[in-house]
Structure formats: C-alpha cells, structure tokens
Image (cartoon, rainbow, N blue to C red; front, top):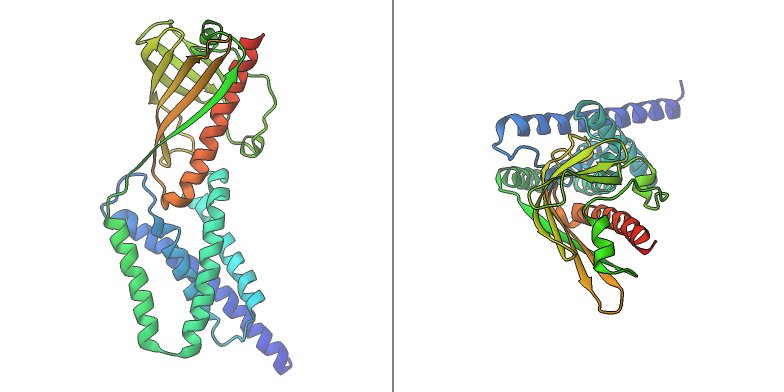
Length: 308
C-alpha cells in the first residue's frame, strides 16, 4: 500500500470515528439531561438543537484535526454526521418524520458551524481557549436545561365570504367533509389536515370534534355560542401523534363573524397554542405557518359551502 493510500485510509477512519463519537456524545448528553435535570415533561430546549449540534461539530473537528480536510469535505462529512443524528432520533427517540424534516436545518446548520469553529480552534492549538469555549457551551446547556420554558401564541386569519352571517354560521359550528385538494406542501407529504367537524348539539357546552385526514380527532367543548356572531371552543383532548405530542398543545379555537352590512361576512379564525420546542424564533415560524394553513383550509371550505 502506497503512502498516499495509507493517508486516505487513515483519514477515512478518522472521519468515521469523528461522526460516531459526536453522535454517541450527543445521545449520552440527552440521556443524562432527561434523567438528571428537572426539566418540564415534553419540553425540548434550544440547547438540544443549538449547543449540542455545535459541540458535535467541534468533536468531529477534533477527530479530523490532522487529516488536512478542506472546507467542502468538512461540510459534506458534517452533513453525514447530522443525518446519522436525525436517523438515531427517529429510531430511538420516536420523532415523527415531518418533525425531523422541520428540525433538520437547525441540526445541519449548527453541526457544520461547530465543525468550522472546531477547525479554527484546533489550528491555533490554544488549549486554554479551547477548554474555555467548550466549558462555556456546556455551561449554557446546563443553565438552559434548568430554566423554565413557556411560550404561548395566538394566530389570527380572516376571509371575506359573499353570504350573510346566518348562512355562514350553519357551516361554522359543524361542516361536512372537505373535498378540496390539499394545497399546503406539508399536508401533501403526510401531515394530517382538517377534514370535517361534528357537534353533539348546537348550543353552549356541546361537544365538538375536529376530524383530521388520518382519522385523528381533536375533542372540543363549546364555551361561547353567540349565534351568527361568535363561536369559541376549548380543546380538551388532542391526538397522541408523534408529530405534535410533547411539541405543541392546541388550547382554544374561535370563529368570529362580522356582518359587513352589504350581504357579505368577514370570517375570522383564531387559534391559541402552547409551544414546547425551543428556540421559538425558529419553531414558531413553523407553528404559525401550519396553523394558518389549517385556518384557511377550513375557512375556504366554509366559504365554498356558504356561497353555494
């Protein structure tokens, strides 16, 4: 075997070693966090998606420090390490495919960033600085894991319907199955979408059910029933779906009907939810987008039924 072949064999071995050690480290830290730290059940803190991936990248860079890897190869190998972490999360943590699709940009981005930070750290061979950086990241992880996390949001959307409030109201309380084609890309790749709503009685306190495309049902209770004006319902039970379980709690929904005085009605849909995944600057973008598309799928259907 030539010297060149030996070099590439050693480099390949160190690349694999770095990926394996980084992923083992990540799952050990997550396991210790789950068993030792008093964290709210179901809450996934920002450190799990930012600090751990950064540390994974730094660990890989340490394993690769003598391999003379260029930037493109570091990026490619970091992506492989990230894919392994995502696959392990699917197998051992029971995460849904769409959840992993949503989280993947964070994992890819911070693992790659960590690898380049690590390359810079280990080039300088400044042991004190390197220990300080790693200690700082671990400190942030511990503080974040011990901190309280709570985030609520309300999403509001409206649509104009060419029908009177009385005509719209009969389809707001409950409506027949939606036949329109999905037009939101997450619905098209398998995320459940709203299909129909049933109600036990048309009155305050009645039980309402929102049925989704995969058969999942949100159990609801009507808490405000102002005929032709305002419907408010609390979600009393939501499906145990891996895409939402422990990640988001839908708390309340509302439909407001505004009579425009010209034969049209403005229908406003509001939803309240608690988000249990952080950082919210990233995940709330997805939560709002999904909620808005649920709103518009339902309200477009109500519009179609009312204008007939």
